[in-house]
Length: 476
RNA sequence: GUGGUUUUAGCUCAGUUGGUUAGAGCGCCUGAUUGUGGUUCAGGAGGUCGUGGGUUCGAGCCCCAUAUUCCACCCCA
Image 1 (cartoon, rainbow, N blue to C red):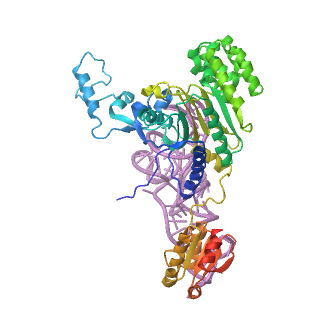
Image 2: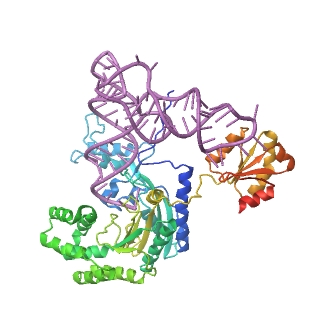
Image 3: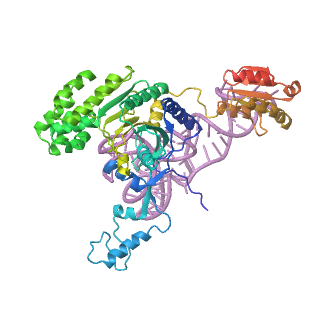
C-alpha cells in the first residue's frame, strides 16, 4: 500500500511544544487578569445546533459557519422532502425531480437544512447567551464568565486570519451598569501591558451614536449601510466612502452632513460636545454620547489609550451599545487583536428578554503573531520544563542516577534521565537541543564518591555536587 | 465568495530556449574525539519535483484540472 502524504485542512495549524508554551503563556496571562476581576470559567461544546448559531452574525457570518453533516442516513429527510414534492404537482419544486425520481439540481443552500443540523461554534458570545438562557435559574446575576476556547470560521485564510483560532472572552450579563464597560477596559489594559504590547489602542464607539448619525443624515434604517462604508475610511479615504455611498443612493447634501459629523477633530471631550450639538435631534444618539462621555470621564486610568472612533462599526449584528476594538500600532498586523461591546437583547432571541450583556474578546492567534513579530515572549520560555538531565555511561551508572532523579522530582525540580546507553556527547546533544540548563553526569568515579559532575550547559561551568547541593544549585 | 501567488531533500531555496544520473546552504547521521554539547575538519544518507490527467521521441520546465501556501478584496479575532 502506497504511503499517503499527510496534510492539514486549509487554515489549520499544528502547534509544536515551543508554540504551545508561548500560547499558554498568553492564555495564562489573560486568565489571571480575568480572575482578578471576578470572572468565572465556562466551557461550552465545540458544536452547537445551527438554530442557535444562524442569524446571529449577519448574512456574511452565516456563510462562514462550518456545518456538520448529520450522522446516519443524512439523505433520508432530503429524499422524503423530494418525494413530497414529486407527489404534489402544484408545488413549485425547490429541487427539480428527474425522470427516475432521483435528486438532481440540488441547490446547496436549500439542501443544507435537510442534511445538517449542527455547526462548529463561530464565537463564544452566542454559545454563552445560549448557556445563560438554559441555566437562568441556576445563575446568580450579574453573571461574569470567562471562556477561552477555539472557534471556527470557513473564511479564506490570510495574514492574521485562520479557520481555527482561539478567543478569550469575558462577559457580564444581567447588569446595565457602565461600570462593566470600565472594568473590561481595565482588563484590556492590564492584559496587554503584562504581555508587553505597549503601543496598543482601544477604539471605542457606540452603536447608538451610529444610529443617531444615521437618523440625522437620512433615517435610522441606513445605519448599517453607513457603518459599513465609513468603517473603510482609513483604507479608501473620504472620496472612496463618498463614492460608495453615492452609489447606495445617498445625496450630496446627506453626505456633507455625514462628513461634517465624522470628521470632528479635537480632544475626546471636545469631540463629544460638538457631536452633542449635531445629534441633538436624535434621542438615541444623545444617549450614546452620554454613555461614551461617562466612560471617558470615569476611566480611573488616564494612561489607557482610549480613542473615540465614530467610524468603528463592528460586523456582529448583535451589538447595541458601546463597541470596542483593540489594535496594535506596532508590527505589521493592522487588524484587531481584540473586540467587544454591549448587546442588549442577545438572550432575548432565546426567550430571555431584558437581560443586557457586555463583553470583550482577545484574539489569541493574532496576539501571538504580534508578540512573535515584536519578540515579546520571555527568553526563558522553553519547549521542555526539564531542568536537569542525568547522563551516564552504562547500566550501573544509569541505575545510580535513579535515587537522585527521584530526590530532585520530590524537591519539585523537573528532571529526567537519558533512557538509552549512548555516548556522552549524544546525551549532551539532547540536553542542548532541548535547552535543558543542567546536565548531571554520573560515571564510575562519581558513583564511588556518591556525587555528580554537574555541568551548566549555558555557561559551560562544571562542578562536583552531592544530591543536596545539586538541588540547592538548581532550585535557586 | 472574487482576484493574484506559492508548491523541488527534514528546513530555506537554485534549476538556462523542454534534452544524459535534479543541485546548494543549513540541518541530520558517522568518524577525527570509546568521559563532555553549542567551534572546526572529513565522509555519508536523504527527492514518486504537491496530486491527477494531457502535449512531446523526451516534461521539474509547456497545457488542463485539483489540492495547498501566502497576499489583497469582502468580512473579521
